[in-house]
Length: 196
Ligand SMILES: [Zn+2]
Image (tube, rainbow, N blue to C red):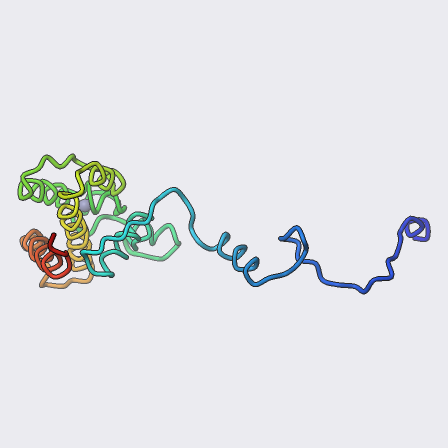
């Protein structure tokens, strides 16, 4: 032990704490916040979208869908939550992932086709939300303003219908999903969209 201590020089200065996450060794709340945020908050190259023409709850649902954070049965199973089935509650044929419930399930496919006919547009068949939003971004700003609300309303109504099936809400019928999309679109667009 003495030989180990032979080369150690003790300083006369007082002992002090050192914050190792900064070069100057000084602690700050800002520095601690950065460390905590970087480990807790999700990061990635997904740009957060905010559509001013739909309610906040719809924007939040879309944000959760973009990050695949909606509580679909597959997402619940991934978190080791004990659920009876991971099958799609609507068709019962496939696992219920976000891509399936919103884009690949027969009900969703038919709905997007109907929305496409209603808009008199050739909406490309999308497999997931990022390709749908990429298509939206490729459209001119004037039409995008309207179509964005329609896409958000469609996603919102599919999710509400799905929840109606899961929680056995008898008011949620497949036959009224399209009507709900149209009603939501007109309500949101007429009350929120500034006339230009
Ligand atoms: Zn399905």
